[in-house]
Length: 353
Ligand SMILES: Nc1ncnc2c1ncn2[C@@H]1O[C@H](COP(=O)(O)OP(=O)(O)OP(=O)(O)O)[C@@H](O)[C@H]1O
Ligand SMILES: [Mg+2]
Image 1 (cartoon, rainbow, N blue to C red):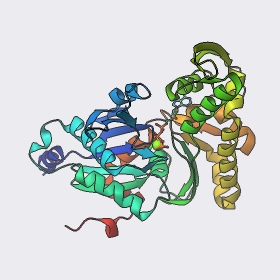
Image 2 (tube, rainbow, N blue to C red; image 1 turned 120 degrees about the vertical axis):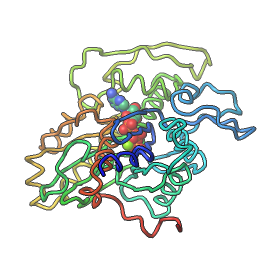
Image 3 (cartoon, rainbow, N blue to C red; image 1 turned 60 degrees about the horizontal axis):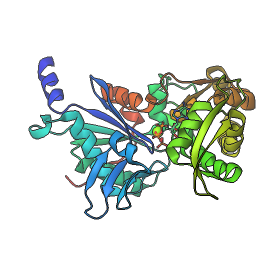
Image 4 (spheres, rainbow, N blue to C red; image 1 turned 90 degrees about the vertical axis):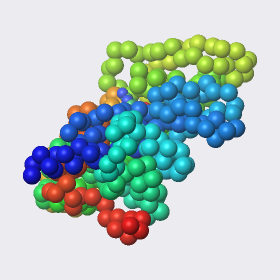
């Protein structure tokens, strides 16, 4: 019996997908994470043809001729361009399966969605995953998946506080007994911090910089709190918007922190409001268990320190925060019988069989 079921699971290997605003990841049951690429698609607008997806497409951002656009099919965590999203999903699934899918059923697919998206948005993700080749599609709320990926005990009565800071959204969730007790989603996260740096460079130094430069500055010397980072400054190259000529200046860690201050404050306030709204019994658990930070934005230097200081609750960054969500969704796949309850109810959205 055992080898029989193994045979079938091989035919339709199950996969978990984190379709993020900034990065997409794919986890294959029994194999782990097999793909991690930027959620970028380069399209030739004259022909409608897709030229590149993922890493290749990201290289093109801001460098393409006018008729080639490198777009992100997801904005603030939700699908903004259905067709391109579907193609991106199909590309990821095909890349993982190569020729295997020519025979046999497609894989079972579990896809993460932000908490609190509308039924229409859920259906868009579901439909995209089916038309990209999924045999059976499940949805999971991203904070729930991130909590499972962080190995928090989500099915017992203790409270778990998770904050997922991605590219498009910051999601704060309190999880207990296998469900989200309450959650908040803020459309301020890593990408907004990049925009802040772009704006700051323009206002302060009259220098126009692109998104990739801004992100490199943020990761290189950005911080939420003065943590005494050694590398205190970086060169910033762009175009002077007055003279139109290239220019290089030096930007300091303090200036970058100031540029991002308002957005960081919004993230902190969101977390504080969630703490204030937590029922007392759960708050007691959370004071013991702490606040867990996941997502790429969690890695902003000093953010954990600032959150601890502002909430008086010990805060830690989960191991490998960028992959926590997809690893959690993968764990659900591996243990579907025990963990089915944590999935999003989608019966009413399923396509007719
Ligand atoms: N070391 C770092 N310091 C600060 N920010 C970082 C660091 N590494 C990555 N990031 C930021 O993390 C963000 C991407 O995180 P992640 O991949 O979790 O987002 P996502 O899942 O694609 O987005 P979302 O969940 O909002 O749809 C980007 O804005 C990136 O700049
Ligand atoms: Mg995410």
